[in-house]
Length: 237
Ligand code: C5P
Image (cartoon, rainbow, N blue to C red; front, side, top):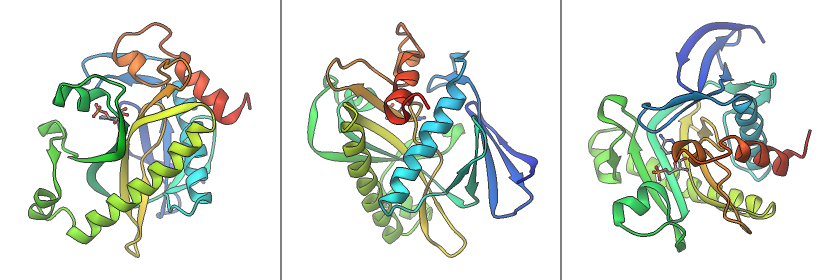
């Protein structure tokens, strides 16, 4: 598949059109930024790890019956995905308190919830991705109530599959962020990436953080988590 025009140049990845109008090429970079884009650095090998981990998790989900945009891995840092219409809502599912949730409600990190929670954020850089609820999303004509309910159900199913999968390699899936898209025939599919950049992943036994929080919180061994996730999910392959 030939790479054609640059469609999007983000901090963590670039997206290109290809010679097939229904297929895009995603190319992961080694750049890490914090939530506000204030801090930026290069973590060598991060792009390849996020690409390989995300492709692997998308495959695990596909095998469990979840429709995703993933098609194939085309190189260490690149993959091919179905071109979909991205719904401009970021969806966050949480199993354990951490990050913005702990801060917003003034609770400690590490509280295991009786059932998972869900939040939606409007994807809008100028507004700093504000929190949004179903009523507001319907009022803004972003999607219908039915579609949003479908997204919630799909997000919780994805959470159950990934939570169990991470558990099998002694990792807590604390929380993670998803984006969804619609195919031409209106099918809802999981899009974007699922990787240590977009999940909080804690070692079950030591609580060592294996995700991007090491970078966000200026912790030691910034890239250790990324390498450990790759090793546990894919061996040393
Ligand atoms: O900051 P917050 O606690 O809301 O983050 C929840 C989850 O969403 C974390 O796993 C984080 O990595 C992910 N996230 C993300 N990109 C953002 C914001 C959050 O991947 N811009």
